Structures are given as C-alpha cells and as structure tokens.
Length: 349
Image 1 (cartoon, one colour):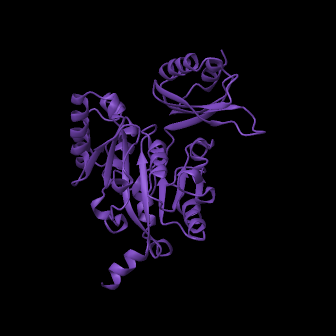
Image 2: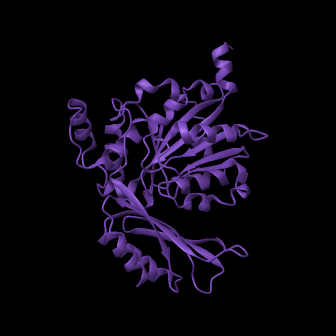
Image 3: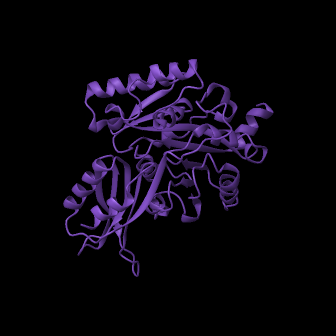
C-alpha cells in the first residue's frame, strides 16, 4: 500500500448531508442513527434561525448511536458562510473526544451550498485528520414534482452556463441545483407521496442537472440503509473541479432572500385542528417551512410538528422532562417579507 492510500485510510470519514428546507435530512439522520451497525457517530447540525429544533429532535441520540457530547450545533448562520469561525472549532471539539468518532455526519442548513464546506476539508489542519466520504443531497420528491424549485432544470442550467451574469428570479433554484451539482448520492425522499409518473419525471429532471453519473435512490421517510449512505469513499475534497457551482466565481454568497421567525405556540386541545390552522397559515403567507414542538393539554408527551409548504406531519416524539417548561415553539421560514405580525396573530386565534 502506498503512502497516499495509507493516509486516506487513517483519516476519519465525514458525510455531508445537504438538502432543501423540509426535504427530510433530520428524519434521514434519525434513521441512520438507529441503524448504524454500532459505529461511533458524531453529528454537526447547522440550524437556520436561532431555535435548536433539530438538536431537540435528535436529543436522546445516545440511545440511537452517539453520545450527547458528540452532537455539535452551529446556530450562528449558514455553515458554508461561517466555515472558519464555526466549523473548524466544531471539528476540533469532536476530534478531541476519547475515543474519537468513527464517522462524522454533517447536516447543513437547507440554504447551504455544499462546495465551500467541501473546500474546507482541503485545509491542512482538517485534511490530515478527515476526508469527505460523500456529499448526499436529499430531495423532497413531492415538492419537486410540484415544480417548487425548478420547472425546467436542464434549460435553466444551460442558460446559466451560457451567461454567468444572468439575473436569477428565484434563488431557491440556485441553492437546489448547487446541492445536486456537488452530490455523490441523491436521495429522492417522500416517494410515497408521488405517483409513478411524477417520480420518473423528477428523476429525469435531477439527472439533467447532474454533471456526472450519480446514483439516485428513492426513499420513504428517510429509511435508507446505512451501508448505502456511509462508505462512499468519494474523497470529495480531491474532486472539487468536477463539482461545478453557480457560485464558483463569487467570494461568498448571501441569504438575504430568506428569513425566519420564532413563534410561541399555545397549548392546544386538538392536534388535527391545529395542523389544519398551520397549513392555512403556510398557504396564506407562502411559508416554506414550519417546524417545532407543541404542548397538547392532558398529554404527557410533546407534539413534534414538521411542515413543508402546506403539507404537515405530526407525532408525539418524547415525554416532557420532569421540571421542563411545557412551552411550544415553532420556527417559521420563508422568503424575505414574511408578515410576522399576521402569522403570530393567526396562531393565537
């Protein structure tokens, strides 16, 4: 074995899981933790907004496959914009664990561009210890079938290649495509909500964007075997030239087109009625994502709520802890211009 191969084998693999808002990244990771064949996993979670919902969803992960100390939350902004300030210290903290993790899983914000993060793995202080096992893009198949992100991805990609100064009316399409362009594996999630015809069309649209042969795997509720997700051995940090991006010529990017707000959710009596109200709010105010927890009167467990557009799912995820305040909180994410006052008022009714 040559020195280069030996060095690669000695590095800890890291998997970057990217995907648009509500695609199902956290659900995928929960399933991975529960079926990881005993690996010591560590997590880096990148929130959008300042409510730790995703960390709360993964709390108790020591029962699933990683210790609570092996979860690091980065809530200061998009991970691809705060690599030097946040990501490097997070990596150093995880590498200092005894024993160190066998695999690190990084869940990016729905707004993150994966390529700047992959570039960070080429930094000497990271490259010596870690390698990017693979970049996984999770796609909300049902939303993509509705044309929410790109009506004609191939045509759009050709236009952008021909004219780098083109004005983009919908920056969501750029984010969506850049995540696909960097991927080693695409998970087409929520196939149970799609017809066979819609699934075939979305697969064709994704293939048209991908610059190289990348496997597309369908899933329901993020149920994917860990053997598929981990062990891709992509060494993505050595393959940056083949992972083109709409932002390759830009020093950075901003997310001024998006905003989030935190809403205190009242104690409710009827979950179905409350979910119906959230769906109406999302539709009326063009909300992209709602997620959080709600207190249901008389129930010992808290209600986990997750919505993409007007589609919602809810379940009781864990009991309220002894002494824990039974206070509901929701984070609402949308494009810039959310009517915070109207959304809060609609929730209070």
